[in-house]
Structure formats: structure tokens, C-alpha cells
Image (tube, rainbow, N blue to C red):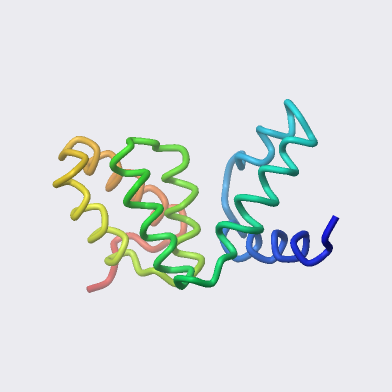
Length: 130
């Protein structure tokens, strides 16, 4: 196995998911299949998330937008935390969610804003500053 990809996976996972509460997808996958969990982690975290074609904050805002429109609350919570970890502001994340209401609907946006509020409350960042 290429040691560089393993190290890049570890670095990117630390950057995105440090201090994230709750079960991470890797832990769920690993409970069912250790080898598949490793393969998925190396690809998703070590190759896709670690790409340097766009900055990490942009990548996470895109992810928040997609998960909002798809109404995937558990993954959204994880990636809102990751967005904050890579330097996105609460206002930027909220703006992305508002923008996605046009495409995903107001109910999906409202659910996403509630999740954003919960994550911000957990981190002592609520209410967000102007």
C-alpha cells in the first residue's frame, strides 16, 4: 500500500473531522467490513477530499449544498462540522443553505438550518456574530 495515500488520508480526516461528535461513517463501515471500510476511506478521504483542485472550504461548502438538497441530515451534520473546521464561517454556511432552497425546497433548507444551529450551539458559536 502506498504510504503517501495512507498519510494523506490521516491528515485530511484530522483536518475535516477533528472534534466531531457521534459515529463517523468509517466506524459504521468498519463494523460490517474492515477491508471495505479501509478502501472507502482511502478513496473518499485520501483521494477525493484531499484533492487540491479547489480549496478545502470551497469543497465543504459544495458538500453542504449537495447534502442539503438531498436531505441527508446525518451526513450534513458531519460536513457542517468539517466546514467549520476548515475555516468556513457560520454565515457562509447559512448562505449556502439559503441558496440551495431554490433547488431543494424550503423544507430541506429549514432542516439544514436547524442542523447548522445545533452544531453552532454545540460549539458555543450560537448566535453567530454579524
